[in-house]
Image (cartoon, rainbow, N blue to C red; front, side, top):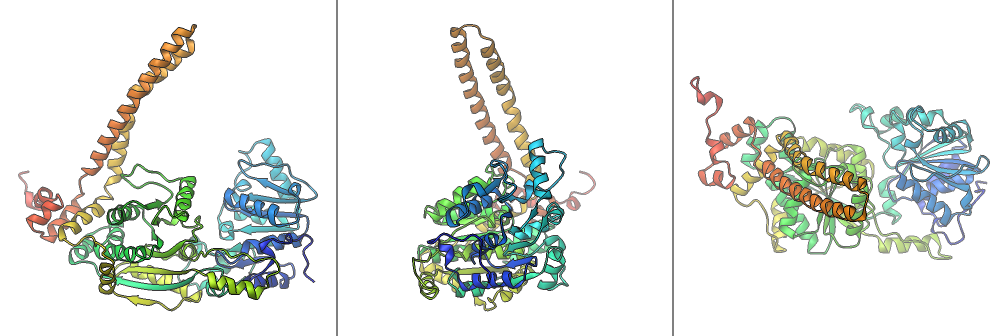
Length: 576
C-alpha cells in the first residue's frame, strides 16, 4: 500500500485531493519507482502532489525550483502543512544557506545554484556542491521541469545520484528543440526523453471540471488592415511588419472595445504582447481612454522609455492589481509566468508568437480562480460542489490581423487549445464588438485618418530609436560628470577635515553640489526626451508616407508635411 512515511497535518487543505491530484498520485504509484514527468496545468495542485511524493520517498529528498521565490514557497508549505520538523527542511539559495543534514535532509534549492562551472565558487559552496552530487537521494523533484532541459541545467540533473527523479511541469516544451514536423508527444520525447517518460498528463479541461481553474470561453476576432496600414505593411521591412500587424488601428480600436465592455462590468484583465513597443503604445492608449490604472509587466525597458522592470517591481504591480487598485495589466512573455492573479476576468492575445510554452503560461494566468480550501470533515464531493459554485468565469480573446504572420501564430495557439480540450472558438466581428462598446459609452480611438497616421509614424520610427537613445543616454551621462566629480572632491575633503566646523561646512557644500547634480540630471533628461521625440524616420519610412499620397491636412496632423514632400534620392538628380 502506498503510504507516506510522513504526512500532511490533520487540518491541512492539502489532505483532501481533487480528481486530477488523485490521478497524478496514482500515476506516480503505478510507475513503481520509475522516473518521469507529471504534466498538469497551473492551478491543478501539482505542488501538493510533489510534497506527498517527497514525504513517501524517504529522508533524503532534493527539490529544485527555477527561482528563489519558488524555494521559499515550497519550504513554507513543508513547514506549515507537513509533519516534517523545521530542522529537516533546508534552504539553499543566494540569500539563504542552511547547514545540511547528511542523514535527514529535505533540501530545497534552485537549478542555478548547482549548475555551471565549479571554479568560480568559494570553499563553502564547493562543500555543499560535493554533498549534493555525492549523496544518493531517495528522490529528486524538479519543479517547473521544462527549465531542466536547458543546456546549463541538464548535465547537472543527469549527474545527480538518485533512486528516482520526478519532474512537474505545465509546459513540457523546449523552443530550441522544436520541429514543425513533430507532434506533441514526439517533441516531449526528444526534449525530455533523457529524464524519463510522461507518467501522466492532465488536460486543462479536466482541471476546469474539478473547479480548480476558471471556466473559460474563447473568442477570436479577425481584423483587416486599413488601406494605408496594408500599404505600409507591404513596404515595411523586418520587425516593422510585426509592429504594424500588432498596432494597426482596427485591432487597437477592438482592444479598447473589449476593455470598455468588461470595464462596465468592473472586470480587470490582461493584454498579452510579445514586443515592448506594443506594450508601451497600448499602455498610453488605454490610459488615454480609461485613465490611470493600466501598468506594464515586462523584463526590460523600451527604446525611448525611462522605466525598467525588475522582478520585485513586477510583483508589486501584481499585488496592486489583485487589491483592485488597477484596471488591468499589459504583459510581455518575460513576465507572464510569474503572476498569480485570481481576479483576472479576461485576457486579450494582441501580439504574441503562438509558441506552446508562452500560450500555456498566458492561458494559466487568466485561468486562476479563487482557491476554495476544504473544511474540516468535508467530503471530496462536498468540496467539489463548493468549488464549482465559486468557480470564476473568464474570457480569452485572440486578435488576428488577416494577411500577416498573426494567422500562423494563431493557428499554433489553436493546436494547443484543441489538445487541452478547448477546441470550440466563438467568432466575433469588429462591427459587433465596436457597436457593443459604443453602447457602453466608450470613446473609440483612431477615428480620423490623421490619428491613424500619427500611430503609423510612431510604429515606423521605433526601429530607428535604438541609436538615438544611445546618443541621448550618453548626453545625460555627460551632463552628470562634472557635478559627480565635484561631489566626490568635496566628500574627500570632508573625510580629511580635522575639525568639526570644517566638516560641517563641507557637508553643506556637498548638499549644494548634490542639488546641482540633480538639477543638471533633470535638465538633461528633458533634453533626452525631446531628442527621442524629434527622432527622424529612416528613408524607407519616408517612402511609405510618400506612397500613401496623403492630403496636406493629414500630413500636418501627423507632423510629416516637410518630410513626406522632400524629394527622394531619384528625384534629386545628379546636381545635389
